[in-house]
Image (tube, rainbow, N blue to C red; front, top):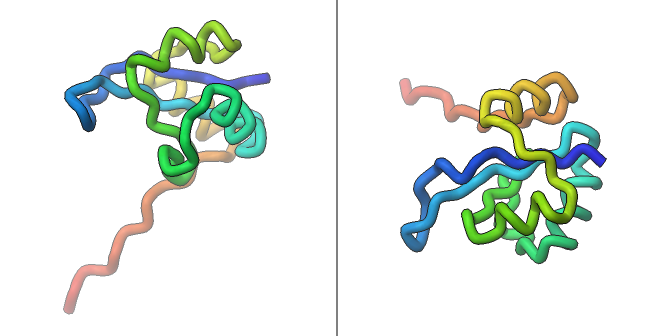
Length: 92
């Protein structure tokens, strides 16, 4: 299993800091881990789950590998699982 989680450094809703949860193996693995963790499907965004700081320690206890945000992104790209936002074309 290669589920990764970065530190909760990203400000978000409810005044909490948030982490990104990804897999560098498959989206199926990521969805299965998120379900085990109790993270709702609505927290999924293209290639990762946004999880609050209150979930970080439990994710690590269940086997997520804590890594820096830079390493998380690097491994996601290397695995070919990075899905960037599509940009809208500029109006004429």
